[in-house]
Image (cartoon, rainbow, N blue to C red):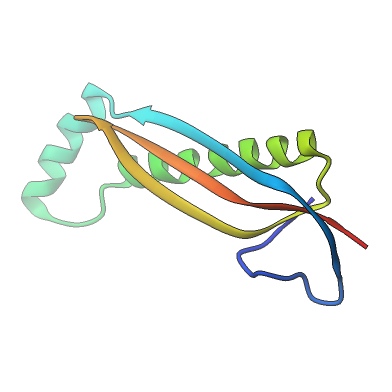
Length: 104
């Protein structure tokens, strides 16, 4: 499966658009990481626990997008976008979406 943020795939022609592929995950912070983050906030710097949580969430959303595209019978997903939204305090959704296509 080819996944791209561009509208086209170099040296490939899009034959058919099969739909919108999407994948999302909702993740919440843990009490332990919140305590550490509060301490880290006092001295400054990257809060690596939150960075890892966001990175894992993005990967899971992209994996689910790819599974959705396969279900649609796509060869590729173009014009991929990622967005986030707050579901409730301490919990966020990461959504990956794009156009599922068949290639010649």
